[in-house]
Length: 209
Length: 209
DNA sequence: TTGGGTACTGACCAGTCAGTCAGTAGGGCC
DNA sequence: GGCCCTACTGACTGACTGGTCAGTACCCAA
Image 1: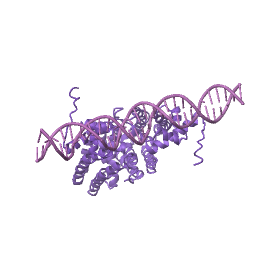
Image 2: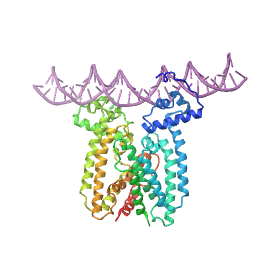
Image 3: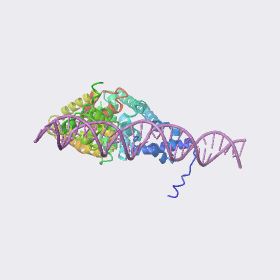
Image 4: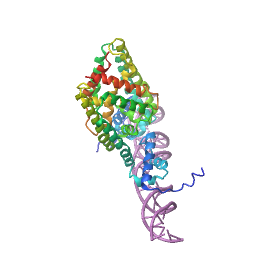
């Protein structure tokens, strides 16, 4: 207690302080969601007072958007690079992706942003639009191209590559949604990794020539 | 205007008033969501004052739960009856289901409750638990039994019936989620009905013996 | 050592909204 | 007509929270 009372004021360089605020916001948003996180909480978690938060971000929504830009865009860039440059057998890549994402979901480390977006999209349509344009559309487009290349190589049957892309991601979306909707109230009915493994096997049998 | 000013007080029997309040809440929750609907709005839409709402429902959450119980349980009963009694070719039923749900999604008439649950689950874990136990688990269980019967008849290959049930619903979940997350900010990338038609065809090819 | 720039504070404001309750009025009954 | 039960009202409270701003204190430069 005695070490809490002094409340020594600490000056930091704006860059450092800004990062600390973003990190605090990330932690709180991921635990409580956007609406249930108060600006006072963000400030306290970063060790400053609320006024300071407003020196760095004009509104709560701007704080969210800054977080999105910091974390999501680099990640999307890496994903697009892989999808666009991969020319091996598509089945192998799909299995790797499903294995990786299944592990993430089972471990409870689903990325924060899809969850937040689903919950807050209707209240913040601008953020939903940003995410849709900068994340969803490019990634699904690259996935569609990947399937198109596989079809033209004769590796897959000649269905609609766009449908294939959406069908491939559907069980991952469902598994993630299940996790963050019902994850706190009951053990998952199916484990994500074997579930997604079964998905890829079924899917590949369904789309082969 | 003149016909609005008098504000004649109207007495109704409690049953009728209660139904009117539930209907008003349904309309507003489906348009604005739970958090963004005020109890004053519900009262106004039902033509009463806020105090009256509290004569029928002790809290806002209780109003939501009453709505769930009124609408969801009968519907689940009908779905379970069909799934449990169907013994024809499973492919036919799956196509029918996909066609029906695809039409609903394309028409913008996705049922209110999945949407509300996904958005509010973390704030109202009791309601999430109710929905999980009374809707999700029974329906997926019946679907699993349906697949199990089809496997034992030799209509499908011998995979895991539980995985099949979850894989079958995944694209519907994804399509509905897309609709109520991004539906207001952009035209859908794929139409649900042909998408789900492609899903059933791919799925059936993937799981045949 | 002092002055000034600025990172920072926290009390305060304004708006919102779930929930309350003392009082009002409609209508059935004698 | 008059009584009384109860459905109904709506002003009010209390708690909350995003955002503001006048003032404070730290640090560095001269």
